[in-house]
Length: 262
Image (cartoon, rainbow, N blue to C red; front, side):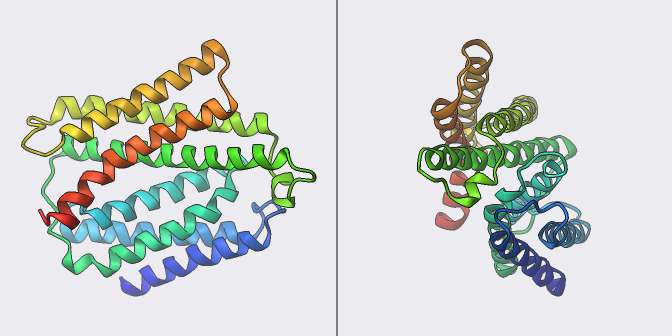
């Protein structure tokens, strides 16, 4: 198990380093993509083995962060099969390596995984998938902002010149937002159906922040369809919504588990 985790972490870092060396080249036929798939495969195997041993996912702070980073990396690689988003791996893969390392380091100190029924597990997993998709959208928004700023300089950097057009990048951003919003909607609906006592489970603020994020993402997509919103407006709304989700998903876990030790 430990050797598998170390190999996965090294593959994540190796992929990101090779991507940095080939910023102006497509990666679909290069080693970075293969290394990233190997890292995700080993990370997934490690996660499944842990699930079989405990008969449940461990949703403690670092375990959840590692699971989210795995899903983000996997979704990015799937999207990269037909969309030019592989350069986001320069950020995503080192973060995945860091979260996986923290999960391994703190695994003995983590509380035992709680027993969740299928309904609650479904709610948690849809929440994680929604957060992962909108995480990628937020990274895409940051890359779009950097691209927009650099294109105004003369001449732009070689990395920026290797990216798709601004219009294509914006189209990718809204595709990610639409998919992420769909899963966020499923997460909220399943939460209202399956969670019996929000106050007893310390979930009120998580629900409120998630609803605020849902309103922001829905408003942005509506503005895109009805008024053609784009550019800086899309970037600001995307990042604001993601920050709210970040506080909702990890803010409470950080305070309860690492500060209050509950």
